[in-house]
Image 1 (cartoon, helix red, strand yellow):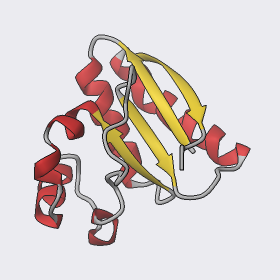
Image 2: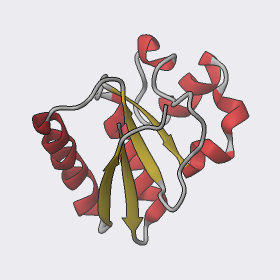
Image 3: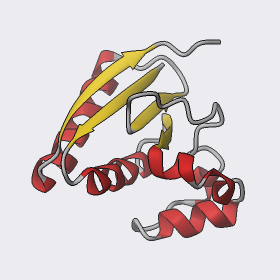
Image 4: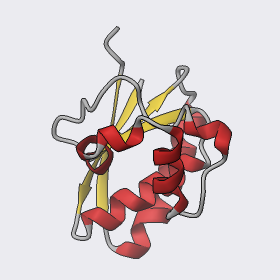
Length: 120
């Protein structure tokens, strides 16, 4: 399942960075966003991932191989998605929404979240 995020800003870029920061601490997901999709070749190596996420406060080495979605940049009309490794519980979805609220409210972004099953 993917939780797609549409950010209404400005500042959309700050919103994307805030969502990336959330993802570091949510081991049940990998992510894709418009910034990563644009620079995808740089994210093919562990060093590239460490370098990028280091600016956000660091990323544990074990997350490097799992944080970027391997299914491509299928963002469509959205700026960001969280891709769940297993079907999330309602509690996990509510926890994610709470984290997104906490991260985006102070910077002035609004958002919508749409959950869709992955195509296999």
